[in-house]
Image (cartoon, rainbow, N blue to C red; front, top):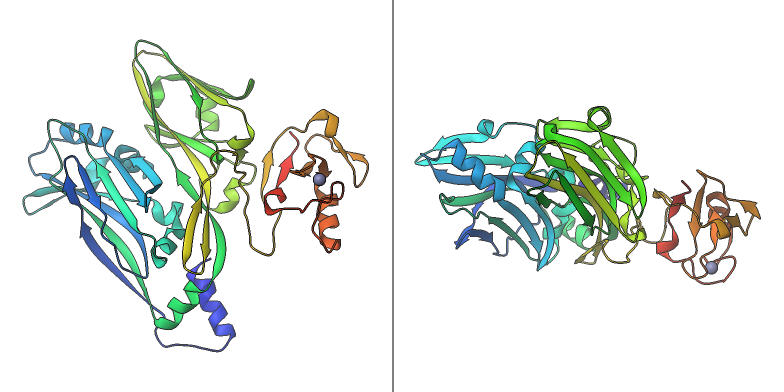
Length: 401
Ligand SMILES: [Zn+2]
């Protein structure tokens, strides 16, 4: 749901207030608590998005010290007490594919590092969070014994709405999928291997790996006991998108793009449907530390000023859960159980690469087209076999691969 669409709707009903919207930038300083810098005031704005993060250091800070700080510094964002996003500062810098020296300015007695936050692209709809009554909180944690930041500020991009727009906005109901990057720090000392069981549960379209990429000999990813990705040095070069010298992106949906669009989740992997997954990275040398940063989908629910984020953890299936008019626009890969590969509607076999859907209640699998047509023509949206309600979470197309 974008502002433009709202605007369009309004034109349709013939009301054209003179001023709908104004933009404003505002710098808000964090309060310091030990090594944490926190903004937990109620930031009152109609709509806002964190845009730039400024970290102020003593002007004599060396680049070496700076890089040590950035290595462990974390920027995170909370809605009430739920964490929305948490990223390492140096990952944020590499995300833009630039050296951090580019982001340094000297202002008064400070050396100021300015980081472009990717939220505008990644969680654009976060704008909406502040239009509800949920409290947003931002935190920058910098744990460094030698040198610390003197102050930290966030520059927000505000939108101010007029009364009509505010009302229009707040009376709406919708759900929206947004993207989230989680960063995990993985390391293995005295070993040339990093081997981790992954505990991610959401729908994932791909992941970043940040670290000394040149030192990586092989990356493999297992879904349960099946190997999904096995890239040697050459394959890493050919199949991974290089963002910077230290950052690569590996697609799980074979699209390879890192564009910030929601279709990018088509064909992504739903980790909730896997018992476990495993990441193994082989290095040339010992003592390695990397960051593993999957891009996950979350659903933001907005209903009459009530706002929720539905995480895809646990057994929650991820669907683009559109109110009233469910759509089958999310497909992800899951091999069908061979005993249930006949569609009861068509009495046809669901072959490899066919799309299918599953009834949560009776576990029957239906060919995508057949169940789509069935639901379109039946009054009560129910399973053709067990007659249980065809719930929103059943509106998921799998690809039988
Ligand atoms: Zn059923």
